[in-house]
Image (cartoon, rainbow, N blue to C red; front, side):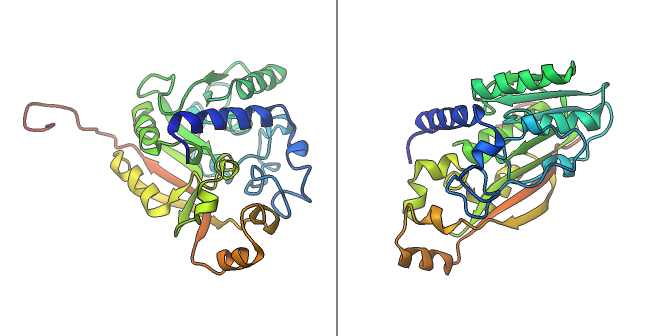
Amino acid sequence: MSNEKELKALVKEKYGEIAEQSKTQNEGSCCGSGCCSDEMYNIMNDDYTNLKGYNPDADLGLGCGLPTAFAKMKEGDTVIDLGSGAGNDAFIARAVVGENGKVIGIDFTEKMIEKARANAEKLGYNNIEFRQGDIEQMPVSANVADVIVSNCVLNLVPNKSNVFKEIYRVLKPGAHFSISDIVLEGQLPDKLKKAAEMYAGCVSGAIQKNTYLELITLAGFKNITVQKEKSILLPDDILANYFSKEEIASFKNSSVGIYSITVYAEKPTETKSCCGPDCCN
């Protein structure tokens, strides 16, 4: 794959294009989300429509889970949504935290920020804000969030370790996150790893499940729990862009697994700090 700078430019370009489309347009090439799509962006998303706060204008069909349903948010919380897109998860979070809470959405793509702000303005919400920024360097002070959520975004970030360190920095002591993401078990074939479309579609940017969970541990989190896991099956018309019929059959019979997982973890209540020359070499 390309270097980190090129990958980020790819994500900004692809998701800028998606921001200008509706969910229906994004799914227009298939017979529903995930059954016979020739677009990678929408084959993994779950159904949000029954969640309180759902706004169809903010749903572009880009997620791979329902992190807000597992995030243990409560009235008055400050919630940060990483990769907030058009605002879907942020608006659902607001329905939980209420008028006394606060929601901050962070997104890398200007057009997504514009769309999310327009949606918030139409709804008349004054306790939601959307900030443009890189989630490897969040435009947020330390120790401000009660909860962090994210939906199918970290797989788009080349340096996932940096993101978990930033999540740790921004969460209050004792606070937690619930994040849905794509992970792997086994090695993707080189043709998929090298495909830019598969990266922007969240697959070739995914890492091994064990490595993903280890990064969370190394960042300092505790009580790490996989709240939900589901298998992702790539449709044949997508695989046909990269493989012959024989290669498709071989891939399907291989041990490679692509999964959507929702992970919960907590920042310890007490965190270590430097106390002298012997404790933080």
